[in-house]
Length: 244
Image (cartoon, rainbow, N blue to C red; front, side):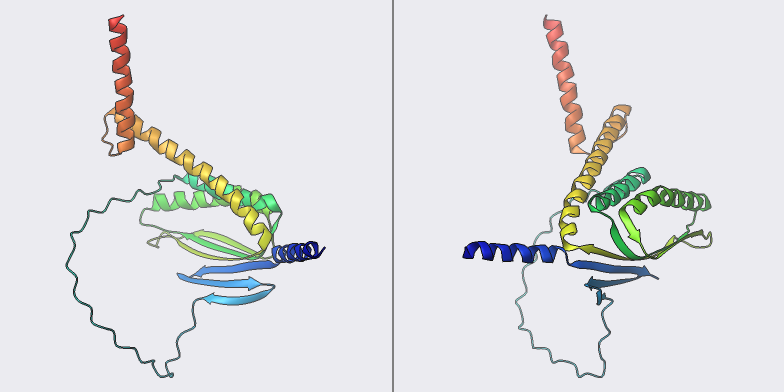
């Protein structure tokens, strides 16, 4: 009977931990990032860090031992990193999948949400198109957000300024969630995002094959191997048909 009591206490503790409300208050205003953790309604400021007290005496640094100079090694050529080329529709689909994944486990509480966006840029046409696309995206995301979140305070504004060199965005969100929901939503988000990334890889692969067939230069080994394999198969089929 003792082990049953111990097991019951452990299960009760885990359940209580899973029900603890935690949150994060994230802000990005005027290029400065702010972050605070929220546990049981108490905010703990993490960023920006408090400035150091200049009146305090500086700590003495220990003298470092002199290290012997190492012989220079031959530098290996760095491989270029592949960038994730997502178009506007794929970015919007990725965001929708993330929001839908968050809403699968009940509505989340958002104490405040602030978004101030000003479109800008060197090209007036691209600036106007970006402004229109942002408004259209917000309109399509609004129904999903209403089903997934309980927003207590919301402030969303968009504008366009052709005198700016680039777009400007100020963002602030305070999200509260139970610890148990974090684990469940993590799996849902992972599978949703993975599906969109696989579709993106497939689209880029098909575009490279299409450009290769049209005569454009493509520097992708995987694509070249696929094309060579396909050509070899076609040659073997022709030889078999000629032999028959």
